[in-house]
Image (tube, rainbow, N blue to C red):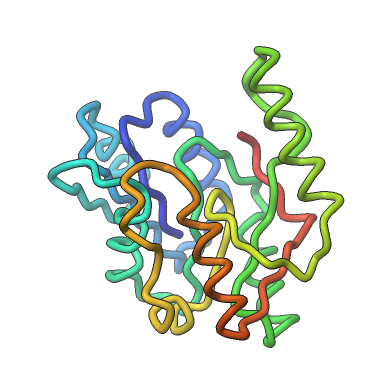
Length: 195
């Protein structure tokens, strides 16, 4: 489980609380602090994560790639620092790969209960949920807010494009490369996280 964080604050604390309720002892939690200055790595430490701090912020693509380089697991599960996984999330990710050995990657969606109460956040989160819940399961892209990929495939593809120095479409771009290379990506609609 790899989480990039840049000045995560209270959202990141809630993220780590969710992670702690979802992982088994053999699950490796890697947090990469992307040039942060608010001590987010201390929150991760308190939850028993392996933490790495990059000296300057170069974006989540670089942070995710840094975490993937040190990961030992066969499945790399990426989440954003502002999402909360549910207790069954990690189990569902692993069982989805076991049930469908032909897929190289999968991703879930936001749930229909966003935590932020303002109109714009509600609208954007519910739109994201609607689009993912009504899309085809045989996907042509990838989402790293709640997405997993086989480690050997990730390495063959060269990881995320680190040319994106801010949160952008680095995950979508990886999905396009995966599809062009002939890999299968699945949208697993029952895997949902709270944003």
